[in-house]
Amino acid sequence: MEDTKHIKISEYDYPLPDDRIAKFPLQIRDQSKLLVYNKGNISDTHFTSLPDYLEKGELMIFNNTKVIQARLHFHKQTGALIEIFCLEPASPSDYALSFQQRGKCSWLCMIGNLKKWKDGQLTRQVDISGKNIEFTAKRGDIHGTSHWIDFEWNDDTITFADVLEAVGELPIPPYLNRDTEESDKETYQTVYSKIKGSVAAPTAGLHFTERVLKAIDDKGVDREELTLHVGAGTFKPVKSEEIKGHEMHTEYISVSRQTIDKLIKHNAKAVAVGTTSVRTLESLYYIGLIIEKNPEANQDELHVSQWIPYEKEYDITPLQAIQNIADYMERNKMEALHTSTQIIIAPGYSYNIVKKIVTNFHQPKSTLLLLVSAFLKGDWKPIYEYALSHDFRFLSYGDSSILIP
Image 1 (cartoon, rainbow, N blue to C red):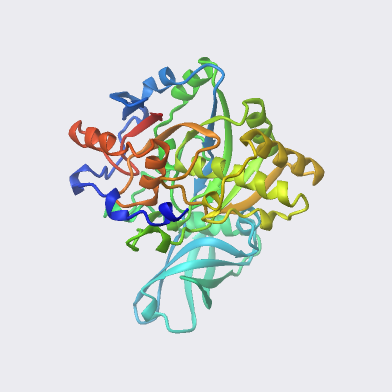
Image 2 (tube, rainbow, N blue to C red):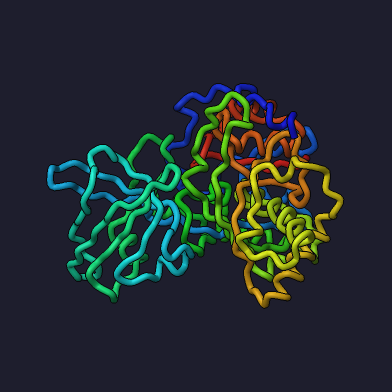
């Protein structure tokens, strides 16, 4: 573990000119470029060719999270603009329940222009389905870097989901350096997004279209979904010189019994679409490990801490770990497992479940670059040099790659 903790983030830097960051997606999603890394060989093609690099009988896992319109704007009587960025539900703490709340709910939020909001509540009039509603926000305690915000609105026929849909703004990544546009509401969602809760898209999924998904099915590849709600922490830069000083953000995951059963059927091996699917799948191994030690653990106790993969060598197989989860769900009559992960995947990490990754090109000095490096045993630089010299577009709306170690 000490070797991993002492990784210097400066070694995971590369030059990324602003004009290589895709500010908008291509008009046709699956016409993006696809870099193919196949056992050290690098080539490029178009995303529609992705099924050519999958094998019949493989299991491909997608993150079906849906980006919410998490940015809310209020004006104080002085005219000062206050931005409230909803990060995760606080009361009730369950995403689905919070979105269905009528009249009030509470969230942990980031606040823009905080110094102008000393006290008192913020109010704005909003039109929802032809009804004029008074919507208020009241500041509570500080929780780490977030603030507890109590939201209220004077109509108990309207849900919080309705409020966000009417007045929220989709939070596109800060490095795009532009305002959200109406088109982003569609283009910054995957075609298979279902479960509301993310404040950032699982961007590897943005390239998929119905025709690519059909081609994957026709190839005989099994498809399954899970949910990891992407938090704003995904954009949090590593500011410490060594990664031991970087605290990973917590993200909430939900995995159905059907997906667990499919993993067992596929010998606990999968192709992951995006780093969020990677983080969830690899976290399942450690959840199975926790259950092995404590079969009666509650779901909160199944949280995967940042450094657990590096604490020692574990002798439980991935298939045993997934079977432990299946048995746990059976004992507790659960259709879905709900817990959280803080896992950091960096060089020194041994992958357990993920055998191939579809992923975009990540920011310099980011934990996602560490994840890719760990998967390729350090061989990330040739990929990024190839992408830079072959006109690939970078980051959320950019091109993608398939990594086959």
